[in-house]
Image 1 (cartoon, rainbow, N blue to C red):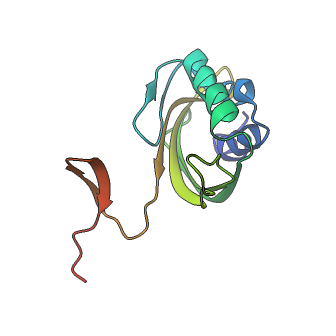
Image 2: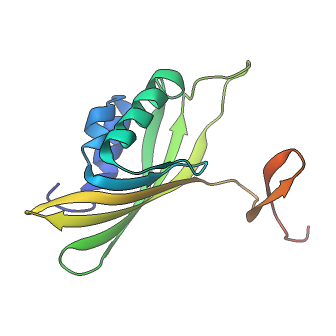
Length: 148
């Protein structure tokens, strides 16, 4: 990539083509990727494998769209890019059609040899009306402490 902010469109384009190799190619060999449920993949090949599985089982007919991006340069060779996204078309599980999801990616990029690569990515879902999660007997659930 010539500029760090290209990560947003390139990631979404690779996602929408279900192209795990192209998606992983946006990352450095030793990159880290944390997904929306905290699974942590610690190199480009694991990032490719995880997305290949996801495209075959969960997201094969999905469409991701860029809603907004924000770039923050940290000198000449480092940058943070935030990508606000929407996702529709996730594969159903146990009946019913999944609705649209919204979330935010945080990418950290480093410039090497005149090209930018992501060295870290963290993806998180946005849960309307929630501020945090709370652990209970049946697992973790989103919650809000705001008074109604």
